[in-house]
Image (cartoon, rainbow, N blue to C red; front, side, top):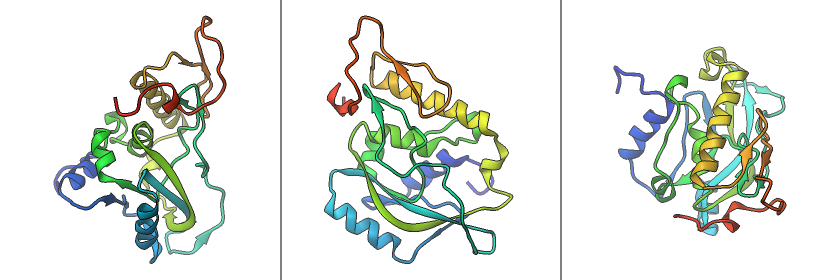
Amino acid sequence: MASERLGIARARQHLTERSHGELILPLDDDDVLQPEAVARFLELAARRPWAGIIRAQRKFIDDSGLPIFMDDWFDFEARQYDRGATQDVTNHSQPYAIRRAELLRAGGWTGFGDFEYAGEDCGTFLKVEELSEVELLDRELYAYRIHDLRTSLRYDKSDADEMWRLLADEACARRQLSVKRVSDKPPFVYEAPRWERPCGRHRFRHSFHRGQ
């Protein structure tokens, strides 16, 4: 592993397969966890056994650790659906704890080879929400370090939009939904065939049996 760059998703899969414990809390080398973070995640996981993912709030710091006051580019709110299709695929970010059992049921970490196997966070949220719930922990438990060497700077907005489109289309196909994405950037808009009467916004768990 030391001599090969596995990429983000494959590195996480490598570590997941060589670790134990009910919860996995992904952490990158530019992240800083608050001292109470692990305890808070464990506490809520015990109170919400149905949660496959527990996601908390984050803040931003510079390379020296000083705070940066800026708006997050990812929402922190309940995820939005249209006839079973996820609209706000970007509504995810670290810090989050994921139940190992749900991650394995979802097929583990996957990403896109063209993008250093990135897309693993968004893809994991999309797959795990088909099996269980995403719960929010409204507390800042993590600091994201803004620096000039972070991986995301190697790609531009068009690259990110392409990943979001691929992930959204894969999720619709996996869920066997009779809708089609008709917008290019999230939050995505979906259209149903003309013969299908619109049924409004609802959770996809109402449209097919989870776990199949």
